[in-house]
Image 1 (cartoon, rainbow over the protein chains, first blue to last red):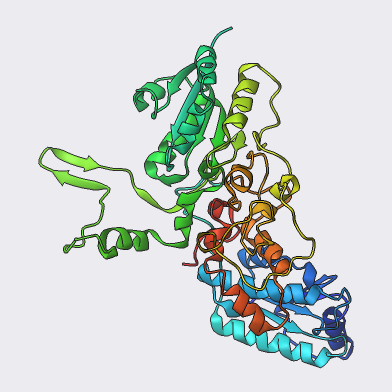
Image 2: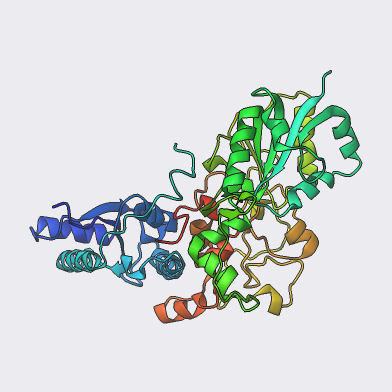
Length: 145
Length: 321
């Protein structure tokens, strides 16, 4: 399925990754477009991770963490939330659709919710179309590495 | 001892880097004693043809300031690369794009339209735009082609060293020149020289609180600035957390102004803007999306502020086509 969007999902270890795992062990089917990267906390996700994913071929980035108040490290998901809102603003300056990056809270018991989220986000990205970030500059102008 | 063969060039730059070299004051006499110049457009009259006539690798050291904005910049960068043993990206523009690279948030067409058609002071009813070649009765007049994108020097040719700064600190320039002239062992190619190895915050003497809680950002033009307290504590965006030190703190210490980031990324950081978002997000005191959006709205131009000197090296690099 070459037309499928590529989506990178950063999931926190304590809630969202366990939730995605539950989706798997419960045999809930959801889109294979989502490539999951486990991180210890949504607060660990640096904006540069998101930029790197978009630059290197992802059409959308999904960030999932524990529900507010549930963070294993107490504050991490709030940091993620603030970074998310700042990054979304800045991506707009680069001409990027803000909807290509989404933040959602998924708890360890919400396998079904994660599967639905993966499907609906993939549909949204499909509507936006491929991103295919252009390499910086023009091949005839810059040095070919 | 034979004299060190030196060239200094400006590409897309303001001339401040050249002036910074002269700011080493009377030591410039010692430099003149030790060096023989082959090109230095701001100070001496050489022609490009003189440089083209030199054997390859004839020049020992070239200090190249300015970004690569047009075909002339690129041509001279390639020429000086061929003729130089050591090519140094000198100053923010050559290092990471600098102020000219902020143009990468716009296309060439948008820039031409703004500059030659739309700007309020322009009267151009025919909509005439600069042409690379213009036929006249005597023949054809040509000017360099403006690129669609602004590059740092190392995106166009190989570079041995980087000296950051807008402009580089004269003390650091002297250290670099002295190291080369005295024949000291040079650091490995690819190094940033004439700068520190840490973030500016590590060497900043301002008082700071560990647990900052900012409920709205201020702007330097409309806020009284405390000379002793961390700018972030005062709700002012200071790029100290994501900027290399070694600048001599002319802004944060001597001028009581927040860091603008001209010394570029410290080691271990890949993108100045992305890292600055991480840093600023940590000090915002809000947990509800609505409150966060209100505070973020007090930062009107994040891309321009965080990548003020490093747009060429930013991960996204340019506006989506």
